[in-house]
Image (cartoon, rainbow, N blue to C red; front, top):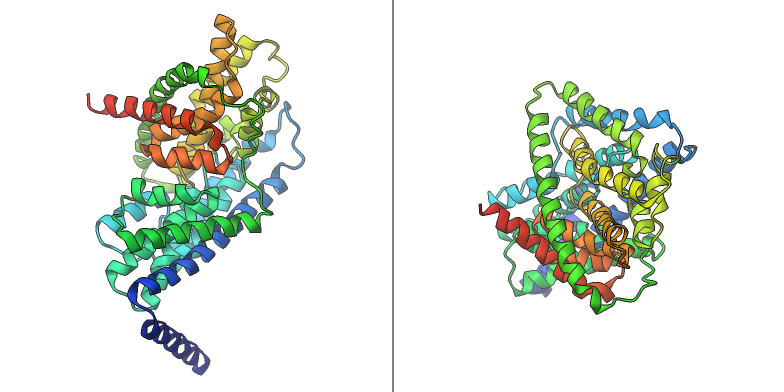
Length: 439
């Protein structure tokens, strides 16, 4: 007891010293550095836990074969995540980004210390066992909880705690994607936090520190490797604009399926029944299309580098895919099924995010678009490049945050060479979605 009191007294003296020797702006910036370090470390831990769980469960699977385990893993993951929330946490932590956004809008800054670790465990159970979604929602919750808890512990004003929650959430996104600008734009476009000059500087510092921390801890590697063997050619701009339209239309379908399926899951009052139904739907899709397992970054990396065989090899139809039209048909089926798999992962009891599945769907959409035109009309559109550009286009349409989608895609794959194409496709897709929403 005395040790605890001494610790708190020491913390109080340290904070008082900082307050006495630093102005308010400098104090907030110093706190943002701490938040960035903690969020970056948490992002690394989450990726590590998901990766180890996935390797442990799928290490002995064979591509193109009947891996019956895939009918069990996703179902087990969703049920375990649901039980963890109900009987250990005694709270629902699904859709973390929406919860942070609602809390900031309603001026509720009460993300407790449980939110610092609980999303890490829940997301590992969901994604490590095959959930077809992303880790960005949970890590944004973790980062926001770090910022909010630190602000309350230091006795800061509610307005400052609000800023620190935004810093933490953005830093979480920056760390999980290794995208500092993307993290800042997440705070501005998605959370819609109004930031002044000093607070936006603190946000940038937190996101830069977080992304660099995660980058160094992961061995200075990116999650997506884009070799860029084909340099950007401005002559493909007309095709990029058409891709933007196609991705915008697909985004409307993606959003509709997510909305309808989420409403269906929420209509099931018994939570265990909801977990079982969503887990079964997810398991069947992952069994038929193993490329839907987890976040899918490995498959995505191969696709944007021209290794399209990953789509046919990692499916039950491997022996049947012997021509381009069958490959196009398989790609279309994955496009149709991806929002179902994503919603089954994060709305039926699982804890995961919406950004990574949108990026994955965008890569599939871009590849489908380029391959279809090449096969049907004898064109030579670089389908791998279209897959990379499609990532930003679909994410911009699904999340309605075009700037974040552009910078996330460019930064997480070191693909600034394609920035103009990313910008055009993303804003065309976003425009299609906004135009349709007004009708």
